Image 1 (cartoon, one colour):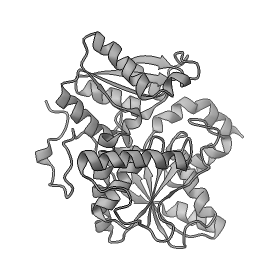
Image 2 (image 1 turned 180 degrees about the horizontal axis):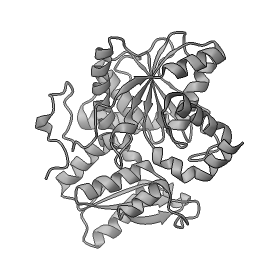
Image 3 (image 1 turned 90 degrees about the vertical axis):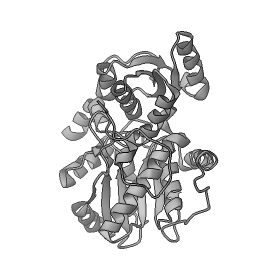
Length: 359
């Protein structure tokens, strides 16, 4: 029984990309956020036309934007004949949860390197960590110091697993290498088709940035198809300069490995602003929220029935919201917020949510 859709069953794409193992429920819908647009206009006097792309609807256990990248990563793992996939992330990582479930779906063993403050297992399984346990992922707990070694950490664990006789495919953090970024090159083609159906292009595409792969794919796909958008990232950790360097590196690999447009070769998009990062919305740090931030996310849920998460999409939406309030977008600008999923992380923040909503 096949768990994915064969390439031959899909319409012929405009872009020529490597094979993927199709499991995402796409295309994901684009919906107007009309009531939120009105709310912002009443509060600030700045009126924009705000829409949302619902990548929180790509599936359940595989939900969120990560599955778009993993379709390409896992196609490569199967080509290599791997029996184990090795990846890494924070203890509540959406990427690691999606990797673990897709690995089991394909009969592979997931091995996760999960970062905690002290390198010890979490005391209580919640959110994505609970789901990792349910699906039987092998977990090695690492310290922040170990995690910062990045590829060296992954290489050491790969060597250990291979010494046990495993055939290991390494998928980097967030699947944010050139192969993973292909998922969002392809997603641009999906969005372009939807845009044609709407008969009005967007001016800006705004998304959360946590490891750089989504940004690199969106920029590359935008240039490959000549779309007129500015692609704006909202860093949820580090800053725009850090991610700009990562995106440049991934884009260079997309060019050298897959022949896609190099950085600076396509349209700058979106008018005078060009591409940039909306900095300053990381708050207390990666995966940490304040009561004021959580109350904005709750207001969005109550206004539009849309749930964001406190790690990625919440901070990105907050950055967009505050930027609109501050008049950083021209009146009437058509803005697409790309919801990248992450709802399970809310369950790991239950105590913070209860505090925020009880005040």
